[in-house]
Length: 509
Image (cartoon, rainbow, N blue to C red; front, top):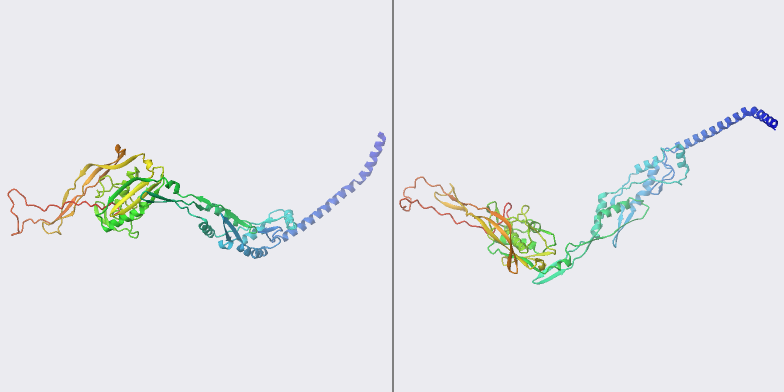
């Protein structure tokens, strides 16, 4: 057996040993051929790829327009031709509630940069390997690549369109209203409004018009309910007067009377919901000639001067007293700088537009209604609410004069006056320090007395102008005989006059 194996080994060695060189040469020849073929194939592919350096690879599209195999110029011309009209004719359907609208793209000035789009299309795949590039060339468009058109538009025109649609579909809520005739209360029901969320609408519309122009664009948005501030169910709780106050302005000038009546008209019908604040200056507004206010006496510093809106402070004072009768306390209230004729010291409330305001807040759990009226030079403010909220109590105010400051007489020499002539320029005013109190009554009996404020009112000196006195009386001048030890009499100053129709500095009203 071993001899047979040895013989076969010798034969194989003889055969392959003789052909070893031939096998090596054959393998080398095959490798050379394969290398030559691969080099030729690669050179051929590379040549083809280079020919596409200035062309867009197959499968590249823009908004569904195939621009594969085109140069930049060809692609730009193709896109301009196919897209311009299509984009301008494109429209979006806007559905809001039961209403439907159209938005033509041409209305919002659509803009796109074809040069950037074409450059992006041409550069697609250009940094890949040669074989990858060749695959783009030979895929016959089976593998598609979409280039974003980057469509933009005039943002302001889009917002203008959105605002126009908003105005067409929105319905403002209507507050319930109340009318009072004696003991009769008539409530007109409120109406719920409708609105759209403009930010959400803008976002949805932007996303829709920036999508594929070949797709149908439909934007839907729901209307939102807007509740009125004042509802009929709340006004139905108002059933009677909880505070009232009247003030007479019968001695007022025509201009002052007109100002009182105009301001009262502005306040009449005001409704305050629970927790809502009232601002006199906001409700009445600026006191200007354009708004109908007239000139009347006002306080400016410690002087009485004519100014537009004189008399308004009698309105704020009357409303203050009515509110306090309803036990509605002040958020902001200031007394006059000097006392006034229509209110006791400590029981007034001054205002000056842009500087001094009178404010209060409805602290009850139901609405209050402010009724203001003028008749026969009497101004009346009634505050209506839920009578039960008073708990059977009633309220009033009283003042207490702590200090009285009488005016002093100041004589000022005036060379323009004849010798010895005296003229009272300023009648003066008495000053006060006063406390005000809120009184609470239950079943007709006072159960509480609360200090509200301590107010100061400036006194104003009596100014007497006097002509210069001669050093030596003129000869022959008529003189009354004077008893020994007595001095000649002087002209007494005029009695001080306290104006009743005035308001506070710094702005005359």
